Amino acid sequence: MNQSEMIIRETSSQAALAAADLFAKTARECVSHEGFFTVAVSGGSTPRPMHRFLAEEPYRSEVPWPKTHLFWVDERCVSFEDPASNYGLARKDFLDQVPIPQNQVYPIPIEASPKEGAEIYQRVLIDFFHLQKGESPVFDLIFLGTGKDGHTASLFQGQKALGEMERLVVCVKGGAPNVSRITMTFPVLNHAKRIIFMVSGKNKADIVKTILEFPEARVPAQRVQPLNGNLTWLLDSESASRLSKECSHEEY
Ligand code: 6PG
Image 1 (cartoon, helix red, strand yellow):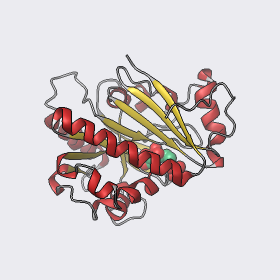
Image 2: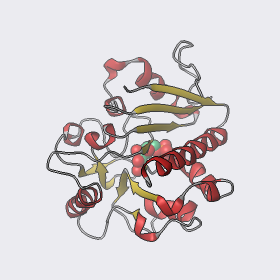
Image 3: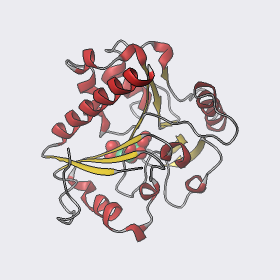
Image 4: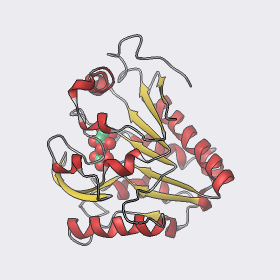
């Protein structure tokens, strides 16, 4: 039975703190039930304050890092030193400061061609989750963001990748920066046990309203519909500011 909920915090920093809390809480629950925690993070600027909180106390101690396996939802095909690199920023913001075993951090490979990188990462998922043909991985938690155009991951309007139902990982070109990218596909996202959409800032108020109140808009982020998982919208007051009253209820 899937559920959706909305959490609204006054400021983006308070929303990031709530996200770090949810990361730690979910990690502890998964490790106590399953013995390990699988999470995939997105790139861009919104997740960075949460990542920086994770590198600080209490989260540095609270998260069971030695039992955590960290993946990426998508990556730009740039060097890890490039400021556009999702992995590079995550290393800087928290991975270099927390005791997660290096062999439990799975960056999307950017050394080969985008096509080869997508194939390699798909193989990483198949091997880690012991998938049979046609199966999708079931992540404990996936963090997503959305652009002002309603894209999520690196799944952009009008692209073939939106309709990809077989492959787990594909390569595309687009976004800002407009580079080749490697991205998980909707089957992977929608099999997650829990998805947290983190959106903040006034400039996202319109797209948040469109996504949550105008299903006919059919923007990519609206294709995120967990099959058996929970969907949480974690907003700050600015990004939630255009929502109708009945839509912006808080259940946290
Ligand atoms: C990426 C992200 C992307 C991001 C949105 C929002 O690699 O670009 O995965 O989907 O979540 O573009 O980005 P901001 O948080 O920077 O607004």
